[in-house]
Amino acid sequence: MRDSTSPAAWWRDAVIYQVYIQSFADGNADGIGDVAGLRSRIGYLSELGVDAVWITPWFRSPLRDAGYDVSDYRAVHPRYGSVDEARELVAECHAAGIRVVLDVVPNHTSSDHPWFTAALRSAPGSPERSRYHFRPGRDGGDNPPNDWLSVFGGPAWTRVDDVDGRPGEWYLHLFDAAQPDLDWSSPDVRAEFEDILRFWFDLGVDGFRIDVATALVKAPGLPDMGYPDDAFLADLTRPDHPHRDRDEVHEIYRDWRKIADSYAVPRMFAGEVWLDDADRLARYVRPDELHTVLNLYYLKSAWTADGMRTAIDRSVAATTSVGAPTTWSLSNHDVERVVTRYGRADTRRYPGVSGPELGPVDEELGRRRARAAALLTLALPGSVYVYQGDELGLADADVPEHARQDPIWIRSGGRRWGRDGARVPLPWTTTGASYGFGDDGAWLPQPDGWGDHAVSAQEGDESSFLELYRAALRLRRALPGLRGASEVRWRDAPRDDVLVFTRAPGFGCVVNFGPSPVPVSLAGRVLLSSAGTGAGDEVPPYGAVWLDLDDHPTA
Image 1 (tube, one colour):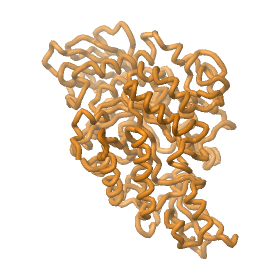
Image 2 (cartoon, rainbow, N blue to C red; image 1 turned 30 degrees about the vertical axis):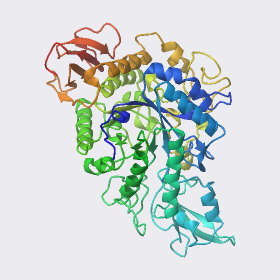
Image 3 (cartoon, helix red, strand yellow; image 1 turned 135 degrees about the vertical axis):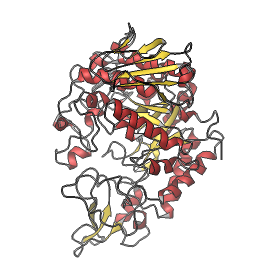
Image 4 (cartoon, rainbow, N blue to C red; image 1 turned 90 degrees about the vertical axis):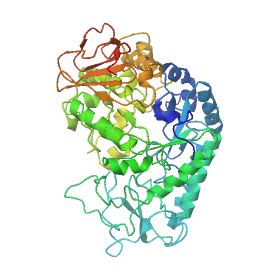
């Protein structure tokens, strides 16, 4: 096995930019983002200063869940481009010093996948059905095989007709009915995904983010969950969960790691692992398994000094115990944008819940907190994921009900808000049919005033979100104290709502979570302030500063 601390291990402290491909940039004027649009904005990503891009699924798909329902893992959906264009994108990103990470979906396929359509044409007990979880129903077949619920709402089972047209077995789908779960006890499934990994690695892709990485293996017999009354989502952290974090899943990732390490420049894996248990989470990043896991504990923590310090300490302890780096992120395509969440009185992230039911949003307050959170996050050791548009200070958009497309909204009958608000196409210019996203509109409606946050409106404005991110990423690359794995050392803070820490050599950070200014409690020169220019000897309310402590040995 290769040394994971070698220079080739770029992923240990990289800044990785998440591209939600259909909302990033439209290159062919159909209102949907695509590979051509992404290629046209490589210069923007290079100027921003990111080390890699993570691209959400671009595979062939009926797109009932934004591409997380894959019908062909070796093809690019025609609305996005082609495999040849993907190969050119990878080469162009590499030429710009940017690595490419794709999103693989191994828990389920699309119901349009050839395997599943063959299963529907086959008899119960057939090899075709053994690749999925087909089971007879209870009560003479009329009720689902167990009580499992879909993450998107409703039962996790759908009944199919037998080949003679009579009601037959049920199939499992932890998400939408169009996303049948694969049965990873099938040798066919394991061999297929190993080949899919090699296909894209051979094309030049540098790694994969693994969707729903804990869910691949289900408990034998598929036992009931026994939900509490009125439970809508499963408790994903309960011990011995029947379809999350099964011990057997680690065998799969050990086999995958062998494939990644077989390349001259080893490839990487980042797992989507929703676990609060530090010991269980650490198992995924042991030296022979995944390289990193997405730090979802940090992402969902409340914007308080105590909450964030606890999340930082627990996250670092979990991964460093097995020699892995920690990752950090503030939002992604599945949750509310950080500006929206931090603009509420209660800043915690609630699983499966978003929208007005969580309370009113003060976007001005949310933006001040989000700027400070960006400096806190980018100052931590490990790698950072930046969701597209966070560098512009975007909030969730209020998408009209008739335009919403998220299966969460659809399957819940409008009871749950869904994720469309965080997926509205980016504004590149202040005016135009789609604010520069493309030439002719956008697949989700952009709100009035979206152009106020456009790239063109922020470039060159030192007080803007964009220039704050650019400055922070330049310093992150340049400062010795922000490179590598130098640890966070907490320092005395002047108030309970302030965090102060240093990293050697010579870096300091002060974050003020409170509504009144606080003195800069470290001796040094202010390098960057979340409040923009003119930083003095105080940290503003809901603000953060970076300091150069080179002449002061406290770091």
